[in-house]
Amino acid sequence: MSPVRHVEVGAGSEGQRIDNFLARELKGIPKARVHRLLRRGEVRVNGGRVRSGARLTAGDTVRIPPVKQDAPRQGSGGPPQKLAQQLECAILHEDKRLLVLNKPSGLAVHSGSGIQWGVIEVLRGLRPDAPYLELVHRLDRETSGCLLIAKRRSELRRLHGVIREGGLEKRYLALVQGRLPRHPLPVEARLDRNARQQGERTVQVSTSGQTARSIFRRSEVFADATLADVWIGTGRTHQIRVHAAHAGHPVAGDDRYGDEQWNRRLKAKGLRRLFLHASSLQWQDPESGHDRLFHAELPAELRTVLDALDES
Image (cartoon, rainbow, N blue to C red; front, side, top):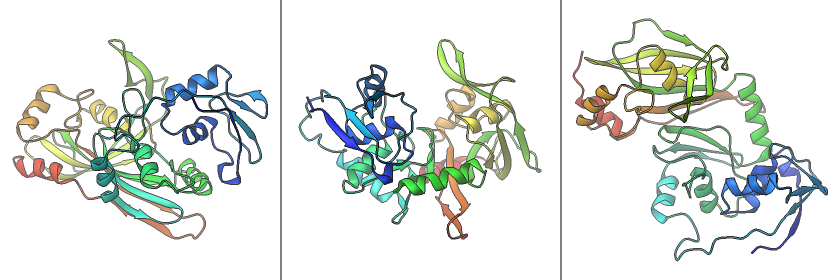
């Protein structure tokens, strides 16, 4: 059982959400338990109860209650060595403010129900002396490619400002069913991420959902598929996957919104994952005014699938 602690919020954590602050202070504690502590009122900020979405101010005093920590298993003091090495090799860029990762498919961006190690937990294990590491945005577990991690609270705020103003250009590569037209195919369909299908939460096109815009452009054409370059103007959950299916061109390997029979045919050609890859990120740095561009090559296992497809 950890002792009661009273932690003063530093300038570097100004504006941070209390749940993220606690996740950093209580390393190894699942996010679900952190939220439980907040709901029960065991966490106090300046002596008062606080909700999980509340933002902290420099100088606030956070009471962190006693927390029972699971006894560490032998060899479990940090992330698995193989996973740590995989992420170390996947770092595309790192400086004092920012880390850019080519996230592997199959790895969640953070821990959660049934997931002990996500990207952010592994990176914190790799950089134990880093005072601050936070996700700037997210990628689906099955999606690979460019992911931004802020190393300073000021950088996180700066990049969130860029995102709010629509200044972060995200591009993806997706193998979709059928042949896309020669001209760009825009899809504007509102998305409801709280819809349920057979008792499972899913994302559906709905007039009551949030606005979402994607543009699909064909890059390579095959007999029954198209490699699409996808630009998204919004970052909704499962946006590309739902928009692609809505347009009649589901993403290959998508076991939730895709075509089951087509997926089976592609599996015979070597596809073992969702064919969706965040290929590049670009924005103008508000501080310097310079453009920043990062690119992640299409993974070898996806290029192998393309090589096995029949050419048009």
